[in-house]
Amino acid sequence: MSKKIEVDFEICEANGVCMGIIPEVFELDDEDYLHVLQDEVTPDNEAQVREAVRQCPRQAITIRE
Ligand code: SF4
Image 1 (cartoon, rainbow, N blue to C red):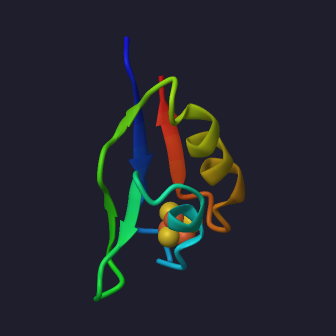
Image 2 (cartoon, rainbow, N blue to C red):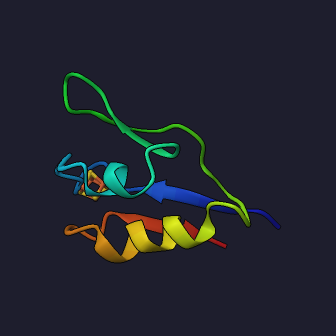
């Protein structure tokens, strides 16, 4: 089973903390909408994705296993 990143856009406040940690996955556009560029958790990105989960001030990011 692959692991997927999920963002609760209802509570995300678009502060960009996650993008600062791993911009390959999280991107804020010019209108401050957050996009998940790729939602798969891989061995390469897992440590940084988990750091983003930890540091998101709104706890808006989860990993579905
Ligand atoms: S760190 Fe959390 S609140 Fe900030 S943009 Fe990312 S998901 Fe949204």
